[in-house]
Length: 231
Length: 231
DNA sequence: ACCTGAACACCGTTCAAGT
DNA sequence: ACCTGAACACCGTTCAAGT
Image 1 (cartoon, each protein chain N blue to C red):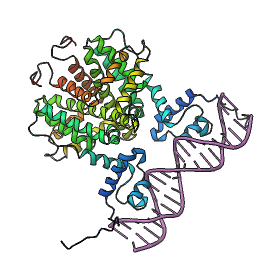
Image 2: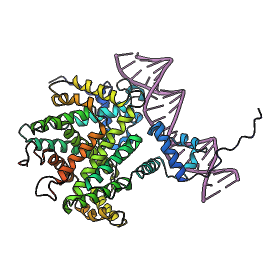
Image 3: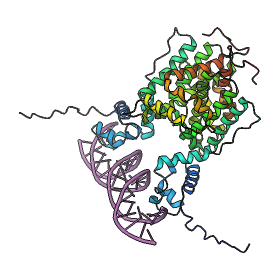
Image 4: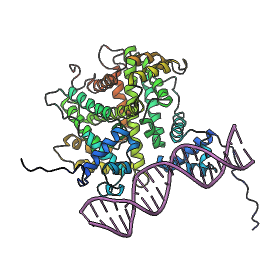
């Protein structure tokens, strides 16, 4: 192997959409959505801001492409899993992707359903078919699951971004519990009764519990498709 | 043509947080979130941009205050309603508020749970107590409902904003149905089977159906609190 | 074809100065 | 106490000019 391509450190690897999106993801991960600047991005790519526009139409598209890149990372279905397990795994895949890249949550929560979200919709729908949910109920069921997932996505995005460096999640939840317990007993009777649960709160588990609740409603009780037995 | 003295018309009603927030809501309704500018707002209030900062700490707080103002508009619970009815009415209240003020959806979807969303959480929770959902399950159930509502909120926000003036919702859904039917049959088998339903899609009804699905999961089948009978 | 970087038309926010 | 508006430090985006 005599061919020794000496790499000129960082010579003009020609700019490409791929490289741009990759650098954007890095920037978003390290400095957040407001840190994704054409100037910062250009510097990281050792070029001028104008160059980026040759490969990408603007900031919105770039943000979308970065989101797509992360979402594409979510694992495929396990063929051996039950439909419920597959849906849980998919939902957790989205959850974890957002945990690792909080800005993705904000992005997904904003809709409208494009390729990114449509892919998730498709995967949920297939599992619902496998669950023998009646045709007429599939759309509603898939939408409900997806909307729930996107709802949590949006909430978690800011949670983790707000938690920034210093305060970790546990401290944050403790503080929240304390705050809830100070609320007006008349106006916030219910909230106060559940405040203490925040101290034992597990975001992931809670998220999954919500998925299970909706799944129960979907498969659930009536003369439905497959009453119990699930789980 | 006796051009008479210009009456001050809009004399310095002294600036106040209330007036500022009111003007912000108007601006947001007419020109969208990107149109809420300190300069535009100042002009509308016949003052300079700096003046606003005396009453409001910055753009983020202003956006939050505007959201609060709209959310405060949602009707209170009807004391005679069943818990399910009350939850549906509340959810529809949020839905309709976003329909009238699309930017509110984006705002709510971003979390974190503050006074705005907490109020909704509280109201849901109370109805769940009335439904005799077991204590240990209340938090999860209320969260699931709220997250679903916020998920739809985020999606609808952009739908309506994208639909802007020309294209109305029906045309938009028709176009979406057509697009879905063009998708790759292998990759989007499920999505294609439900595409046609978009042509008969009713956002409001679909939203409610999702609520009912989750409610079914909550009250649903097991040895639960009040198995059937509900509705 | 692709890249450069100055220039344009904006922003949110600050702050000395006014009343 | 409250308001004014110029000024500051940014933005995204465009575009003539370069290779």
